[in-house]
Length: 433
Image 1 (cartoon, rainbow, N blue to C red):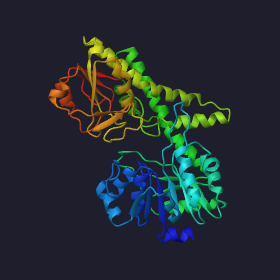
Image 2: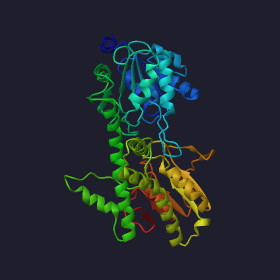
Image 3: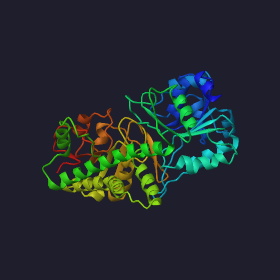
Image 4: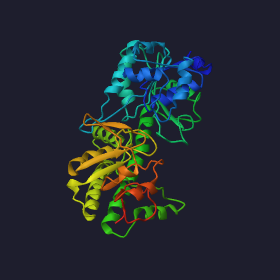
């Protein structure tokens, strides 16, 4: 029985997708004594993991190496080995296509691989962020093709990932886990499994409830970021109002307010994507998520607003924008990590590139990046380098940056993150008119 294997820690776990969600999860499961087989289609990445090398901020190579050396973790591209696993977690990306519609190919492909070797007693858990009803109307029908019955022969649940890259306070273990199974038995087994390595589990009535929970969490953030981004634009238009001062003042209220901050846009896999998954599904029910879609558009337009601010700042300083030399500081989507997924800084780069004479970037966490199939390398941040540019633009406020150094050696600075607290005539802040 699967519940006995779980309690005795005799299970073998398969994790499909060894990225920002799958790899940290793999390490934590192995840390609690279970053997884990990690599956990925990227041969280079699989070889790297088997050599104990991690490119994920939240997983130290030394920690990963400990488990690969003692055979607790093994990565492979051979999906036939899924039959060896008692529990299988799907942690693959769920992007949107060029029309902002869900692209579930990675989830579908993974499920089809599972179905090929699905056997009695296996528990499948979908963790990839998606729209409500994916587990029951996309994943389940594929697994049923095996001839096995859910809740009796195999088990299926949805458990949303709650990974916040770079968060030193909350990780896999101490972040509560929401679980919704297709049947009561599915929920019970998934709950039992997760209680082996996380501090708190919160079961809900169905996969749909769990799927919607994830979308509510991230849409909540997206909406509030959009609200404060719009306030920032209004403060600039009105002049004489500092949005950062306003936010600090609002924070003094001990109830009814939660601070969110403006910036060049939103990034990462979830926040820019989730509203489109929800709005796409809502249309199936003749429901239009007007408020949510508007918030997504406001945040997507922020890179254009930032570029306009840069161009305006250059013009006011007496520099012709078309001949200007621009240095972007920070390309990751948030501070102190190397994650470039949907980073607004990349969008700023693409928008401003044809409008200026020269553009370069520096990011201590991103030594090189690929834009329009062209490899671009980070420049060294020296006093000599800074002095070459007409403007330095702070897009990601990494803690390792010395902002006093940046001020000292730069002619002009556009700060989109309030990284520079002190007022300085060189510094033009987002949200300050």
